[in-house]
Amino acid sequence: MKRYQPGPYDNLPDVRDGLTRKERIVLWVLHQTQEERGGRNVPTAMLYGRVVEYIDMSVEELQRILARLAAPQENPRGKP
Image: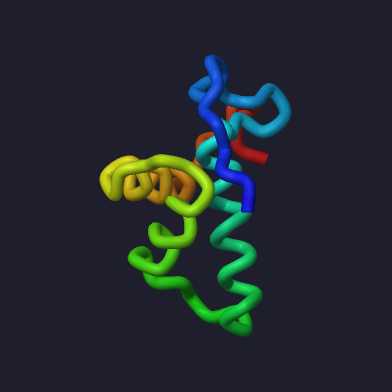
């Protein structure tokens, strides 16, 4: 397994969807783990253990990312 090496642009959101590199990795690992568990919820501790196999991240940073991804997003164009 190849471990991710941090780069200078890791904290910049991608123009396509606004996700940073770390957020994208967290979502990818979450998706893979949910598939392995048959669609069931993934405990945060399990997710953290798998995420740190790819990138260096504190528990607090993972929790901030999960809170940001779970928060409702405002629609910049107004309500439909």
